[in-house]
Image (tube, rainbow, N blue to C red; front, side, top):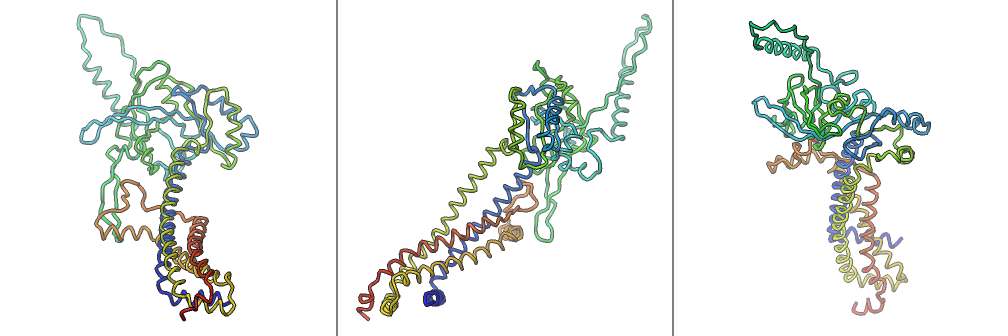
Length: 475
C-alpha cells in the first residue's frame, strides 16, 4: 500500500514529471491521428478498387483475349461448387485506344484512353458501374448506351439532310440515260459512350460556404446527347486501325483519378464488331456471394482453366503492388512516429535519475524501516507506469478529438494560413477520410505505457541498490 501512496505523492509534487506526461500525450495523439487518416485513405481506396474490379477476375494473357466467354461462364455455372458461391458474372473487353473530340471553342483534343466494352445488364449485376454514373445512378431501371429519343431523331434528321445534299450535288449528264434509282440509304445513328468524368469535365472554384470551405463546381463542355467523339483502336488479328463515331450519354465518376481520367466505356458487342473480335473478350469479372470463399473459388477456377492460358486472380492480388506499397508506407511511418514516444522515454529516464538522486534520504529511511530492494524498485516502476497511463489516456483523448474534428481544424488552418491544406481538386474527396481502429488504439496505448515502464527500470534498479547506511551517512 505504501508503494502506491508514494507513487501518487511523487506524481502530484514533482511538476517536472508533467513534461514526461505531455511528451507521451503528444506522441500518442500524433500516432492516433496519422493512423486514422492513413487508414481512412486506404480503406476508401480499397473499397473503390474492390467495387470497380469485382471479387475475382479471369483475365487473358494477351490483348487478343480469349474466345467464347459464354461457354466458359456456362462451365462455371454447371459446377455446383462454383454456382453456389458465385452471384454474378460479366464479360469485359479492355483495350488501349486514341480518342479525339472538340471543345466548344473549336479546339481539337487528342488523347490516349483505356477503352472498355461492357454488357450493361450483367455489369450492373456485378456492381461497380451504374452507381458511379453521374446521371444514370439517380434513375430507376437498368443503364443503357442507347441515345435518348430526342437525340436519335436529331441525328436521323441530320443524316437525312446530308444524304439529300449528296444527291443534289451529284452531276447528271443529259446525253446519258438517267441513272437507276438509288437504294435508300440506311441512316446510321452513332453509338453511345460513357466518358471518364475527368475527361469530359473540369473544376472551377465557386466561392466558399459559411464554414470557409472552398466550394467547387464541375463544368461539362462535352454535353450528353450532343458531343461526339471519335475513337480509334487496333482491330483483330491483323493490326489495322479502325474507328467509329460515338455520342456521349453519361459520365463515369469513381473519384479515382486513374479511372476517371482514362477510362471510356462502350457497348461490348459494338466494340467486338469494331475490332473484328466477335465472341472474344479480355476478361470475365465475377462477384461472389461471400468474399471469404474467394481462395477456394480461385483454386477451383485455376483447375478448370489451367490449360486455357488465362490468369485467375482476386482483386487484392491484381492490385497487390499498390496495396503492399500502402501497407509498407504505413508501417514505416508508424515506426518513425513511435520515436516521438521514445524521446519521451529518454525524458522519463533523465527525470527519474534526478528524482532518485534527490530522494536518496527517503530511500535510506524506507530501507532502514524494512523496505526491501524489490519494494523500492516497485515504487519507481509504479511511478513510470502511472506516468505512462496518464500520458496515454490524455493522448488518446486528444487524438480522438483531433480525428473527429480534423476537417474543421483543416478549415481553420486554411483560413489562418491563406492556403488550402487539403486540396480537394487533387484528391477529389469532399472531406478528409478517417477510420479509427480499436486495435490500433490498444497497441498505441500499450506501446506508450511499455516505453514509460522500460525507461523507468534503470533508475528503479539504482534506487533499489542503494545501501541504507550510505544513503543516510551525511544526514
